[in-house]
Image (cartoon, rainbow, N blue to C red; front, side, top):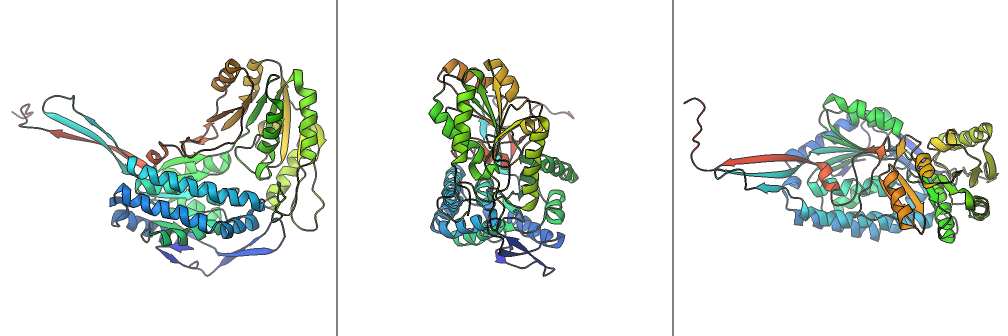
Length: 482
């Protein structure tokens, strides 16, 4: 693990293994943290924040560390990408892209270091001058999932560091490798000891210990909505601030007047990218009845041609499923769709591989909004297709889940595009594109898809407290005790 600027074992000496989901062999052995290790990591982060130099540095000095981190990530791209592929099962080509995307987030956060500011108030009377300032919130716990290990910690950590916070991170026990390597990268980039600490282990006990810890000022969590609710409950011990990025059941709306060639590629990419193990997955296709038969047929034919297999093969676009639990969950949803009366058009089973866990790209049509495969997050390569006639009906179906993370709208009519964008309750709407992302644009969800926002110029403010300072000028004349 990485605690107080050093690589350390678990206090108990225990370790755990990680097997490659694409190859069935051991690819990592990591320290198994318990509550004692969490306490050590939190104590180091507390000291670094309360007495260390990091919160007091200028924005310019903090930005140098963040930018250097970005450069080291780029220099170590091949090593980091290989680790992510072996632990997560994602295609190696995609993993390399994710290293570049991660580095770009550190670049952007470095720029924000110099733009954290408050306001002044000079209109409160001749004897009063006031200002508001933003101060770092303190020690931030970060719990991250297995689907985009380095990318998701890079959506959180550099922005907290830009604000002057310290942090304790617990990556998923399924993919801890790149996050642990990030500790060494930050030390090389010049980050003071103790500012970032990383523990590896299971949600119980280490994740729970972080959520409950009285010395943690804020927790930032990405994962399932169910676990997110548990994190909120655990945070009540000291009323720590909570930021959550949770699940999604994101609709892709295709209208009859759309550029269907472009929409086709985006729909297939949207649902099968990262094996569908993606909170932004476009797992629901809502297609206008006028074009439904033709468009659905093209989706099916395209899905059949997507290369699935060894994540280390440069040609692979769909890799292996992360673990046995997720594998069985996906197959369970496929069976649920069959039982509910949806029509299985392609896929639906396990690919016959010698080793590893692979599921065929799967498409259901004749799906009804009340079916589980239309309402619940599957987190796998499964597309549920529904149809609509009017934009009002499309909006109603799109909003018929507990989630509100993202949506895609395909149309050449600007009135339709903006009417639907305004009507869908989701944090991100893509018009005539899907899953594009930029560090400058905020990301987060409505409803049970989360609390707060990551990325964008306001993201640094998530990791701050706002303080008002009032100054009285001249003699105080309105004396109460006179």
